[in-house]
Image (cartoon, rainbow, N blue to C red; front, top):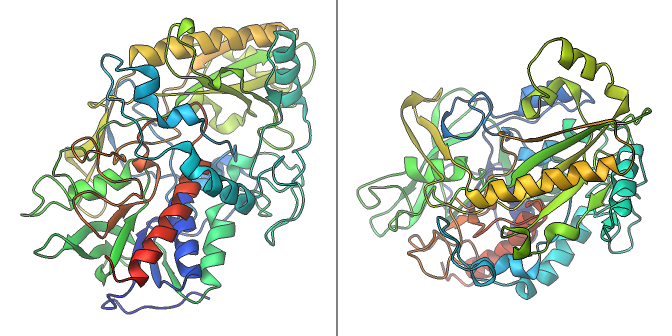
Length: 515
């Protein structure tokens, strides 16, 4: 049931965004009797097994300006839809390693980076990780079977074992291998990134939003794009102004505000919420909002095999090679990376990778599509203070607000890591008989992290270990923006884990009238 709250009801918590962070936070807060208004800029997507159609309907298509190394035509891939980017995530569900929370201590002060240690550690998050895995139905964990084997994953795993890799498996995916949480078992239809039409894949759209609605303490407002967060003379947030589906501006009062709009839109919103008290943007006294933007490095290894693979069939990610997630400076770089099998969805493939120029040679390669095997490389991206989100000077969105300006230049460590990973990835496929192997580093971003990061010292970041901003006591960061550093594994499980922990803390504070 979608409850309705009055615009002047200042008892509610406003959650901005309905993805992994916002959806989970909403479900957890409402389960504890906290009234929540969730404002989502997009609409509920119509899911179907049509990848480009779903991308077209859900992708955040507002203009952005770009500076640096990214693809200027499609620099980032995030959703503007109920459920956020979980609608088309690949469902890889892996924990960060203990050293990932001690990056500065582990790697040292790498020149040109802005590394810090997190203000929390792995042991603090471990019980919340377990709860998140169970909630999301992670395969191969807590009594859930592994996802089934498929050709694309088997090619990667066989090649890796022949090359001497030890940590080779089907990984852990938030895809139901048995019925779970009222959602069915996966039917192996493939094209998971197009949205799961039956709900076997965990998404905020199909799991967390319905969970919140069932409590009677939740209202979802679709097509409600927040343009500013307001505060009182004492610097406490009092509510938000948003543009509704009719294009009219509305003001929702709030007891607390939690921003989970993705690592690009979250800092953009804080920067747009400047005032006399916060002349450089809300919660930005230290000038840290928007800085240290990390994207997770993304590479692609595509092999032409002697016979058919049909990489698009079945669950998208069915093979995982995790030997390299460790930190081993003898390789010539800090941090680690992961190989994970990934199907090739032809209509959106050129946005990620293209083997040279268009033309006859490209057509010959494409004719061999059934014989292609493919893996993604996900690598740790180093934080750099000047890799950041700012406001564009001239370009405006449909509501007259400045769009995000993205500045991203890869650090030497990033390039060394990816070069190593792609060369070894080619050897994996050569070991299993690949006739040709194509490798590339993507210039389109899939994860956006660190732009409102956690820090012990307010001078180093935007929020504390619970995501509470250093400058504003009732304003919280609830998405990947709060990550202090990147890692060699995807961020979604950690976003959900942090959201569960944040919700418990925030609910306790609200019930004790401590905010």
